[in-house]
Length: 514
Ligand SMILES: [Ca+2]
Image 1 (cartoon, rainbow, N blue to C red):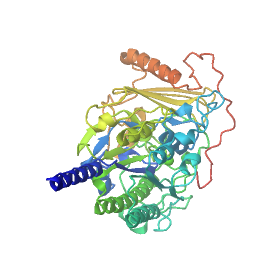
Image 2 (image 1 turned 45 degrees about the vertical axis):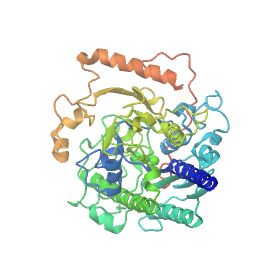
Image 3 (image 1 turned 60 degrees about the vertical axis):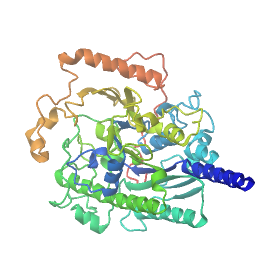
Image 4 (image 1 turned 30 degrees about the horizontal axis):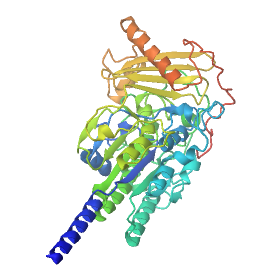
């Protein structure tokens, strides 16, 4: 009898041990690509010719967000504030590098100690990072326990995306051989598809593209190249407000060209680089599966911001149309309904709070993001109603956007007041944000996308005057709430002294790296 009790006790101890391992904390694989429009991907644009079987599998096995945004930028290098927001969960004007933020105590000191790697290190996670170098958040990046950063934008295994893939594969192999039992957080960043978009010869050939270097001519046409984006324009309808901006004038292979051959070749290069990223993701997912870790891992796929490449006549990331303000955002993991799709209305700055929530860690007090775990578990469709965006890296105040439901307002106040533009779009009726220039036969004969007559900027239509006023009011409310240091021409100045403008950097005009 005594022995029976002893064995019974041993069994109980064994059971409690096995249930403890069953409820072990989840791992995280956070995948961040550099410069990618959601509309490049089939899960957002079924007409896209980009093939990404691994990303498609995340969409099939997880949740696709239609409303994921980056909050914007006050510098040409949009990557930089975006990555600060991801790491810290702070809103755009409350970042350590935002104009006046430190002087006005809008950002606490030593914020890096409250960022993803710091928080997860303290919680007992193993943290590892690979990513590009530069235009990021160095003080936070260096806190990852294992770190392999280098900018890899070439077309060989050593100079391109496979290099980042190799670092994660090595890390996982080391975990395996050392039998590391800590849960992990891997920040799996890439340097592509950011320019220069030097793809591998095989993938370039697949998308009919060449690494074009002759500034005097357009690259050759090739029927394998992706089609022009449906909202392509040969020029933006008005000056976008950042003269000399590198991305709009100096990207190798594009420069100031917006002709069909140049844009289709550059989109082909973008796709070649994106498919190579997908191959690396596939390797890592397969490895996690073989290790038995995949089912307990949240896999997040996103980009630091979107990208134009010919859409609306723009080439870069410094605008607030949906192709650039929005980001792709997919999550697969425990408890997430496979094949689900939501609006979400999330910002990249919600990532920190959400990862903490999923891991059962209290978010740091400095966090301003909102956990969207209730969306991942199917309890909610959105975490907020109103979204705000800014680009003020050029002439001031620059661009602002606000979105609520299907309505979106963009305002541009730039070039010393000589550019004052208002755009009002109903995104359900006009998802491509077509403007009157898209109705030109010369344009839609190239894209094959003839807009319907109502698919225009509605800002001057008297029928929508009340809606316009409502959206203007929402924008002002958001600018005040978020401590935007500028006001637009038709807003009260609120007694603000805007930050000194300083010389325009042109975002490293003509320089190769940024
Ligand atoms: Ca970027």
